Length: 334
Image 1 (tube, rainbow, N blue to C red):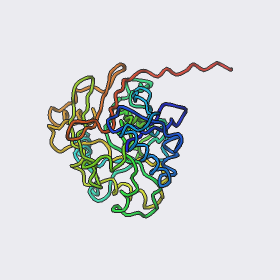
Image 2: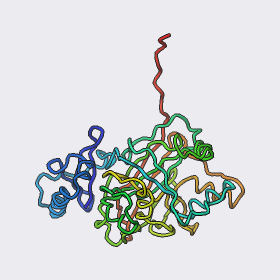
Image 3: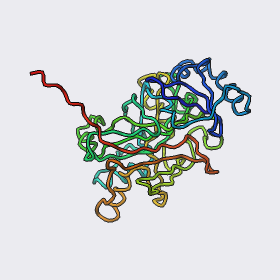
Image 4: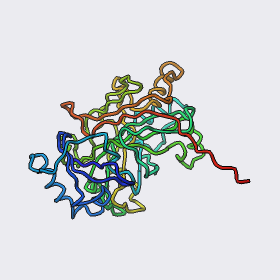
């Protein structure tokens, strides 16, 4: 099943989308928003699936042509965004280039942080930031969205709580991150709001791409119009989604609508390219002694898209440009 959210208010309006991404139908009679559907998933999923089946069969007179430009983030506000650094080559390259080592227990427990979970931008929304000097970067990844997850769930049982997958651009500000991490209190200002691809997909809809642990397929990445990555997402990580969920669930339960990502996708084979500028620069440092590729400037564009073995888009694309955020002038009340 494929779902999306029309831009409407803070939380959007839930729609069911056809398999070929050409038509859609409102899901308002079943669930007004994605969050409402996730809150009542066992109750509403059968009705949503029936809409999906009828839509694909051309049996719904109320169906309409899908306009991607009208879509926002499928889940604009999440109760929790848990993001990892699970692809070994990504973390190894970045840390080695900085003269740092990978944590001694990296292969025993996943690296996970809790990021900003609200304000997810739509697939084509302009990213506005206060300065080009922040080291503006993208990070392409696939995130799972869960229902209620009980505290203490095992890694094996955790994946049964995944109800949807989405494409995410986890925006990073590289000029701020190193100093924040050295303070040993984690990311904060270096991780602003991120964006989602337009289509949320249920695990069963992924077919052979979903093996119950990882999502396979190819992550395509373009920076300033140049192809920089064609990365297989279902390999080169010692952890799967269940591991990350179980790691965090040791001490908490999850509310429906929790977002869980494995982090920037990366392959051991350098020929696959990279899914962030930071990793490109790290490889340049390791190979040439200095980084050459600049981070994003205002007016420049990033595009990411994940495809199946036949080249079909799975989640739709993310295509964004970067612009200056103009801080509103405050009145002098002295």
